[in-house]
Image (cartoon, rainbow, N blue to C red; front, side, top):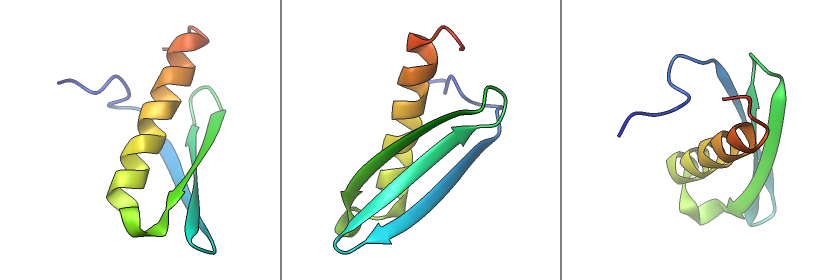
Length: 65
């Protein structure tokens, strides 16, 4: 499966809030930002993948991808 965001610079930020982690993802080309939250026990890789999927969804919905 080819990632629709491959080759693009994506900034990922993790912010722990109690038992949750807020994850923000920003596409530097369009300056589009999304945020998700999930349990800290999910692990960074899972949260990062979910944030990137959400960013891809938003970019497609706005016809920026």
